[in-house]
Amino acid sequence: MTTSVLLSLALSWTVIAQGPSPMREGNWEVTIKMTMPGMEMPAMKQTQCITAAMVKDPAAAVPKNPGQGGCQVTGFKMSGNSATYTMTCKEPPMTAVGDMKFTGSDAYSGTLKMEMGGQSMTIVQDAKRIGDCPK
Image (cartoon, rainbow, N blue to C red):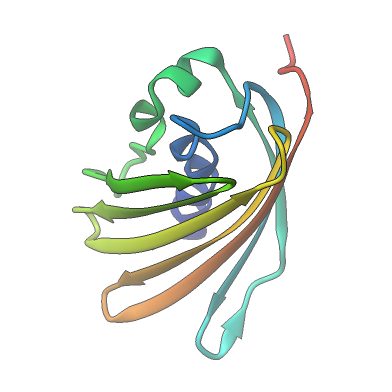
């Protein structure tokens, strides 16, 4: 799986949790760190505009990149300031278990543990709302 596909999955994580979460629409800065057994990639920082439409329909924000598809989020549970969920993709086959902890409506941190093709990967995210989306 390419880094761009993994990054898209990781960024979609921001949106996946928005259904019943305390997050709100706006421009979010997300720091992503990916590790695999024996390998650690440098942290990446990206921004993502979370729109009102994405907040209303988080499933629509699951990436549909070429070479990756059929992703579905199941078992989403929100308890207090924490959320857990499972994500599976058909192409390429991948399963992931995620957890997130929210700090109010403007920040969260979380971990996504993925299994694909017999390999495991962990994605750690820290995100904060940095304002309104650019116009």
